[in-house]
View (cartoon, rainbow, N blue to C red):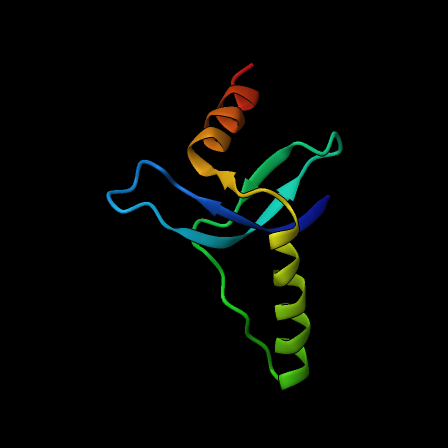
Length: 80
């Protein structure tokens, strides 16, 4: 299972805002699920935080995800 960090927003929130989410893909490279809340870098040593921050910066290389749309796709896929 592939995972990556993606910039995403939920348009139905009262005040739509962006966050970086950890997103997981199935074997067909379709989103299977994502973290329920935006993530923050953390680690036991500064180098871990540096590495995680670098990985999170890659989220800006792709267009932002719309979480409401992703939710519908995941729901539809699970109920087929």
